[in-house]
Amino acid sequence: MATQCKSLSESVPELFERQLTTAATKVPAAAVVPLELIYLPRQKHRRYFDPHQLDALIHSVQEQGILEPLLVRPIGSNHYELVAGERRLKAAIAVGLKEVPVRIRELSESEALELALVENLQREDLNPVEETEGILQLIALEQGLTQDEVVSGLYRMYNQLKGNVNSVNPNVRVRDFEGYVQTVFKSLGRMSWESFVKNRLPLLKLPGDILEALRVGQIEYTKALALAKVKDQASRQGLLAEAIAKSLSLSQIRKRVKALQSPPGPGRFVDRIDATYKRLKKSKVWEDLKKREKLESLLAQIEELISLE
Image 1 (cartoon, one colour):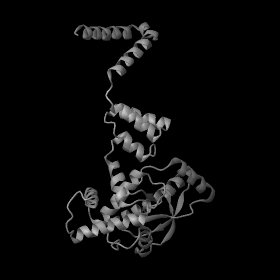
Image 2 (tube, one colour; image 1 turned 135 degrees about the vertical axis):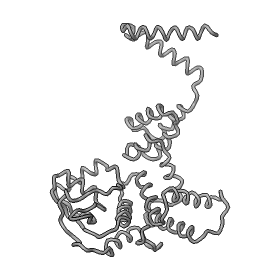
Image 3 (spheres, rainbow, N blue to C red; image 1 turned 90 degrees about the vertical axis):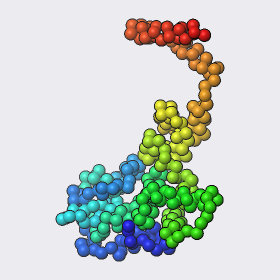
Image 4 (cartoon, rainbow, N blue to C red; image 1 turned 120 degrees about the vertical axis):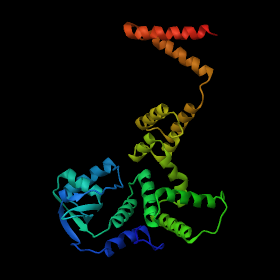
């Protein structure tokens, strides 16, 4: 567990600045390093970057270069691991830079992880999935818990608040956890911990296709929650594709979800048969011998079903 962030009164931005100024430096604090010597960390915290914002940064780097140094830590001989600044690194690679300015800090793996999480959570363009995962990772790191334990602790706090469970006198560890949770959300200033439990934690239970679309910014999280109510995978994927292609509003998505969840009545089924029959009469499918044979086989099955009435 990291030991640098024990004060519950310390804000997340203050933590970031203090980590930078108090970390022991056995190498020069600032330098220009060849790109080929900088490696990405094994545990990446961002998997999606808004292409428009990245293009804007690339244009800026072309015009002005890298204005803010990347943060790295030394690993091995003359090699470095990126701690903060992956967008700047991508932009530097895109414009063909050979070297970039960096701030070098001697950091342990846990300290580097903490700094990367904190820096990431201060970004304005972080999508809801990565923000949710980042907050859970930060709390888990600071409290020495697994992410599943953090989620359980958050639900316990929420249920106690709503009176769904009997309140008991918490021990010191529980009080520390609850106090740290409240401080993190107050410091981030994005949402309350209650809103996080109610609206964000459910995102992690979304079907994989919905979660990925949300992660890469194709849909908003309110639309993702609505789409997830469609349990049939094929129907859900079809509606997801339509929602993305047509930029459907939340109300439009909810109407389509409701229609998919409603069992088709006899009238609707008959209308569907009638519409299919009209299309079939106008179709050139009869000109294809193989398709015609298949249609004749299907028609025979329908006739057999009718004869059994």
